[in-house]
Length: 559
Image (cartoon, rainbow, N blue to C red; front, side, top):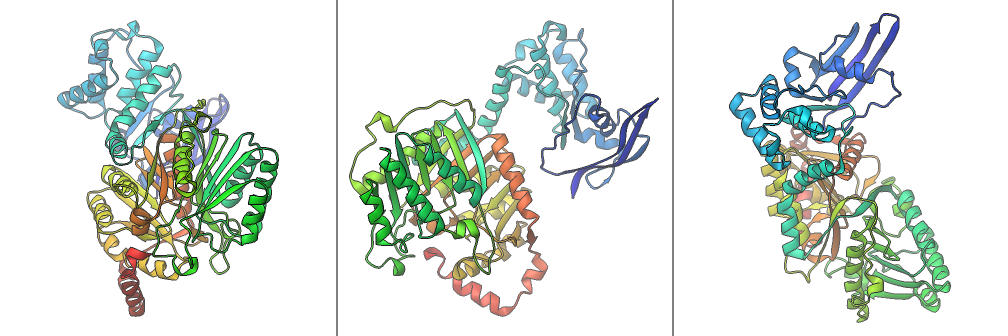
């Protein structure tokens, strides 16, 4: 259901037609932009939505019904022209306007003092507005816009006059909200914050591998690559040839592959790479990899670092199915990240620790491998590595905390869902507390046993109010969590016991509204290719399916 709709809205001023049958649909939880040249009618439409003026014809719907006068209290409107009284004191004016939004005097005063203290502007309380700069006035206007906690926010040129200091204060407010998660990850995995980063979201194999190959081709000093699966085939051959080319150019190339995940990799492949000067080693080699897939500690990480400048992390392995999909299942939907900035150094540290494990070569003490490169970005990131060698199940604890911190929504996309009782209870508790919890799992899986085991958890989630969706446009292998549009997680860890306790994994925890909202938007787009599971229909699924689910559940700790 759309949260806000306009249908065939028309507005005429004398001889000027400002709006000509304008229809828009704004889904709940989405950021919607009105773009157009001056005079296109953007402000006129916003004024109609806010009931400042009326349309000549057409309808405005709010929350699924025709707009009512009382709905105006659910809107926060920041106009381009700042509607504040210049001769009036800031505090008195703020309270007055908050009361017009439906707050009592006492509640308005309490909320305003809290916001004024957070923005460090209490000394302005008894000043007249005309004494403040444009940027200062903008800060007051912003607080007044959101003070009544509206369901719909409308900003018209919101950052006009908004200086970098004020923008940073808004970021600080977000950081304060997620401080418990930051502290947890600092304590359980020594995950330091990196602030100066840019992140590009890559949503499929074509975009991901194209970007990785492009970065590798530009390498001047070194390439560090660590993957669970490197397979023979189109992608594997292209990777090999490119790495050999770079090695012959004098670039240092180091590769770690998991011996079980890459058990199909021919010996010839490895010999060719070594002959070209590439240092390539298996992680925890085993005698019979085909038969030890589920009982050994495996390196499930996917990391690429090029020259300490560019890093990649996510769910895609170097196997053709990640590019072309699988017969009978369809295309492969996955999420990968391209990272620039300080977070690349954190990914490098994870790789170098693993390199020491497989090669007993210490590179962490060499500054050329730990550059602290600055970029023109402000995305805050924590890199969280976990594995059986860790004192804490860091990623599991991160997921648990994300779920418990949620006040509005939690979106989870995972190909394998076998999380254990602690995580299950946190999801059920969040849903029963009114949080919009949505989980996306595949309709068809690449693993029959995990498919039935995942299904075994669905009914108890549905009974608690968790919404569960099955992705039908192929196989969704993404490992993504988005919480309240504030923080998100992307990486290699599935929401299962094996990823939490047995595999070596790595995730990025991203504290950024823009990245988190984009990931949330991608999730909602994926829902369009999914079907929601109805609890009523699910309860009456065939008895043979219930038996399969119960039997598969017994193997959950090993899957």
